[in-house]
Structure formats: structure tokens, C-alpha cells
Image (tube, rainbow, N blue to C red; front, side, top):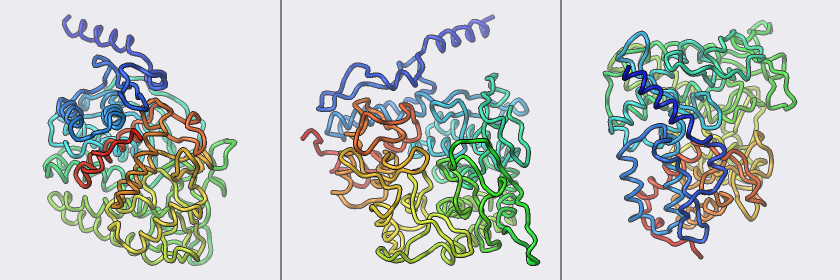
Length: 501
């Protein structure tokens, strides 16, 4: 009887909470006492999806380290966004009450993206030793392991049956090989960074906690085996030695009005030369289809985190750990041998995509992994000469998707289109910069591009801050908070500045 009353009370509370898509697009008091007068955009306490005392302590403590009142409010609104709004369910596996599960949505879509959920939780890596954050990490790792074991080619997933939540069907008309169960899969765009995100999330937890015992208990090892097998299959090229066509293990077709929502050659994509160490990707982290299927930022991310997590595997299965190291090293070698091209203005740079035959795509996209994010991923130091050349290219008008204007100057991408900069890209620029002037300028741009709503949008028109997409984008919000915490360690004097002039 008590349990029934508790469920009814929780249901009633959930029904009384406003839709955060609408809530985030409106201004709420109290306003910050600065020129931007940012509203307070956090849900009321009883409407927050997950509470952690340490998070509240850190937010309160930033009043002493961040001098500018508008920057204070922007941090207060953004950093806790994932916890406040996107932890849709936590619980345990129906097959093992010791196996924690956590279903974390991207924001305005009720599905769990592999990439987004890993990056959303990374915002709290610095406090992962806190019990409730650690539990959330373990729950997400376990659920991602389940998803990857079942459908390693897929990028976004439905709530687990244990949650009692109903699936949301939007992409069940897609023609995918291998076939998927849409009660489990929300969307099945194969993106190498989705697989890499599983390793990133695992490493972020382990690097802080050193809790290797956890990884041997449930489905993590099996998920690693499935992902490695999948990656090997996707190292094969389009043609056999005798010239016959090798059908890829995955194909994808959708009826769409946008080229970036289709995969040509009957769902197989552009041909690639095989066995050069790289892994194919049909889609980018923006969910747009690749032009050339060796997507370099994704291969960088995969190599980096597979190599890192081999340290975990050494405590469980040394042979499998060696296999992880070999695959990661082979990808890194393939990147150095095939993905560095000469730009007439910037010199040697990393290509965004290649096909192994000699064709390449020079651009960058705001979504992470990106070329700009290479040091953030831990693949190269920010001082590396080829990265510096690449960075100079990415942040220039030579990058076809660099949006510039009086409002925001940042990488965008085809997902929303030219002229729309992603605040996420400005944040990544600051995370990978050691230049005080560049960082200060970027902070000013971020403060001035929220349309006075005090949150990070997905994109902002570079000439009109009132034209933006997605009021509720937890990944970008959390990344902004992560950047502020990073600056507090690296360059605390920059947070003592006033941005009121």
C-alpha cells in the first residue's frame, strides 16, 4: 500500500512539472544582476530528475570564483542541466538486482544516444567519486553495454523494459541491415563515435575511481568483444582482390528530402579502400551521413579510448587487452599514414574524411568528436604542429562550415546549415586554447548568444541571436559548465574578469 501511494505521488509530481522544452524557451525570475539579466532556468527542486548535494555545493561556491554575475548565472543554469532534466530513469536489471541501470536522454528527444549520454556525464567526471554520480556512471555503462551487445551499429535507444516507459517510434520505416527491434532501438545510424563513446564513458569512470572490479561483473567484457568484432568487419574495403564487390555488414536506407539523411549506392555509401587500419563510419556525430566513410575524428576517438580502456581489460583478460591495444595502435598508424594532407595555406592538416583511394574532405563539424577536439580527446597535445595547423584551418573562413558574424564565430555543419554557429564549438575552442585573449573573447560570445535565455542552444545564427535551434540541449549546457571548471583550474584569473562593459 505504501509503495502504491509513493508511485501515485511521484506520478502526480511528474504530471505537475512543466515541459522543459517550453520552460527553457521562457524567462524565469530571479534575473541575474548584470547587463544580460539572465533568467533562472533550472527546474524547481521537485521537478529535477536527479539531485546531488555536491553539485549544489560547487554551484554555490562559484559565486566566490566567478566575478561576473551573468557568467555566474550561465554556469548555474548550464552545468547541472543533465542531472536536472535528462535522467529519465534509474533502477536495476530485471536479471540481476546488483546491476545498476541509468537511462539518460539527450534533452528534447526521449531516447538515449550513446555519444550524448557519455558526453553529458563527462561534465561530472571531476566528482565521479561522489556516490550518486558514480552510481549514475555505472548505470549508464551497464545500459550502454546492453545496447552495444545487442545492436552495435545503432546510435540511439529506447528506454529499457525495466523502466516501464513506453518506446517512442520515429524511425521504424528505416531499412537497416542487420534488422533491428524498434522496441529497443530508437534509431540505427551507424556512427563510429557511438562505439567509441562506450569506451570514453568507461574510461572517465575508471580513470577517477580505479574501480576495475565493476567492469568484470556484468556485461562490459561481452560488449567490448562485440564492438571489436564489429570494428574489424568495418575495416574491410569495397572491393576484393579480384575486383568483386564486398557487401558491407551494415546498410541503411531512408526516404528523405535531405541528402545528409540518405546513404547513396543503395545504402552502402562511397567506396573505400580496405585494410589501411581505419574503421568505416556511415554517419558523423551530427547524425549526418559521411561523404567519405573513413571519418577521421571518429577514428581518433575510437583509437584513443580503446587504447585507454585496455588498461581496465588487463585486470580481466590480458589477451583481449592486447587485442584492444593492437587495434587502437593500428588505427593511430592508419591516421598518420593516410589522413594527413597538405593544405596550400595551412600546411599539413588532418582531413575530416578520407576514402583511402586519395580523396579527402577538408572541413570540420561542431559536434564532438571533431578535428578541433583532438587534444580534448587526448589523442594529441594542443601544441602538436599538425594539430595547430588543423586548428588554424578549422577556425578560419577556409573551413566551409565556419560561421562568422557579429553574434558568434564558430564551426557549424550541414545538420542545420551554413551561417549557423554552434556554441558547443566555441566551448571546445576555449577548452583547447591557452590564449587568454582568445578565451576571453569566446566567453563574451557565449554570453551574448543565448538570446537572453541563459542556456546554450544547439545553433545560433551568426548575424541574429534570436534565430537559434533547440532550447533544451543538455550536452552543450554541460560542456559549458565543464569548460568553466577547467578554466577554474587552468586560468582562474579569467573568471575574475567583468563582462559588463
